[in-house]
Image (cartoon, rainbow over all chains, first blue to last red; front, side, top):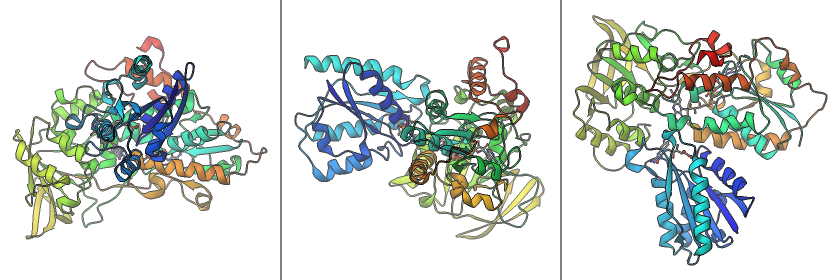
Length: 150
Length: 391
Ligand SMILES: Cc1cc2nc3c(=O)[nH]c(=O)nc-3n(C[C@H](O)[C@H](O)[C@H](O)COP(=O)(O)OP(=O)(O)OC[C@H]3O[C@@H](n4cnc5c(N)ncnc54)[C@H](O)[C@@H]3O)c2cc1C
Ligand SMILES: Cc1cc2nc3c(=O)[nH]c(=O)nc-3n(C[C@H](O)[C@H](O)[C@H](O)COP(=O)(O)O)c2cc1C
């Protein structure tokens, strides 16, 4: 399967996770890794599946590198019908009220434009001590398995 | 691409620079040098003990040395153990990412009185930096000057109960010190109005979750969006036993000795006033320790706090480091005759990344149940490789 991995980050954790996922999935699939800051909404039409990794900042806002993408979504209002994406959040439960809000906001605006969310959005908690790749890899394998059937 | 790059400072700016260089040009020889025996600068010694999530960037930095081919030279102070001139002669490019380690003085009459404690000095002692002095007694009514995140970090630590510090890496010494303090109220003083405070919204939200805090804001904060609205909510929703007063538009003009400690003269929109303080904690920024000076400095690349002064958090360090790495790759003119790391290899006392991995594993293994790590606080201990028998 052709899988495009995108990341939205401020301190680089999501980028490292994107690289890890790509390395792990490369054995069975073709993957690409891009920063959301350099991504046009139409780029989501290329691969069979888009996997988005996105952290949260500010007051539950998008991280800086996802903001230009969100702005382009807003400005261009593209019809993303037929686009399939899965999204994994990076967050920190210390920020109770807005835990994982960045990935939630991004998912919502993609869905509003007609894209289909595959699987569940899960959020890694940086304060937990769990490694994000330990969570994201099985999550991605499940999503890929599910999207073969779907 | 080949070439030899030395980076002075293994804090976030140095590490993000190394990461970006090696990601773009895996063939480079990138050496990251730190005066301390351990890497990661303020990620270890500045970022609050109870913000472990933020410290998770060190997992990225680890990979520079475990997977990307970077080398760590710890316990090596440029300007003392090796001169900057020699370093510049040995490498194709030298990056100064040495941060800022001194406290910026208040710049007021009386700013050298005992009882004034800079945030660099305080946080180093709290987080067990090997060059830290002892933790000072704060008395009943410490006053914090500054309206940035560091001021809030210090405030939060003073307000938290021992239970609220669970999961942090605050050491046993600092934890005991905290529990011995008998703080009855805390005042935070800042020149700016609440609307211009540089706190992250998340930091204010976090204060609102603490059980002991009873916050008030002067002049009263208006509701609405942004930090001021969050401060207004903080004041409305907290009613714990420890009064914490935020005083905005309050400009310190002088510090004097007072009966039970210090007196802080301030001007406010309502005129001049004097606040009494059992201790004065200044969180107004860091300054250079002047260790890296001389003409050679201008020939090096600069990044992070060393380049810009004490503003900007990790995201900005990363962004600038990535831009700098791109510039270095454009400008690099490798000369194979330069010795590179051969200059450093024989300097006595340096430690490598495997040494840090052993310290790291040891510190995690000996942590108390309510802590995630127990730092080795003394330089001598940081220089002695812990063995498994110690665990
Ligand atoms: C108390 C405090 C709390 C903070 N909390 C946060 C936070 O929660 N989130 C956030 O994003 N940012 C936070 N910051 C900001 C963040 O720490 C800085 O943006 C960042 O550390 C700056 O990185 P740097 O690499 O420029 O400097 P530093 O982190 O200071 O690293 C400089 C390194 O250079 C080394 N060095 C100095 N001189 C020499 C020499 N002559 N030879 C060799 N090595 C040398 C030092 O030992 C040090 O390891 C905080 C800062 C402080 C002070
Ligand atoms: C100032 C600041 C604000 C944050 N706000 C949130 C938040 O609202 N919700 C959340 O889940 N995580 C929040 N985080 C945590 C980050 O999203 C988390 O550390 C993540 O791993 C960062 O990933 P990145 O390096 O890819 O940006 C915040 C972190 C910082 C430093």
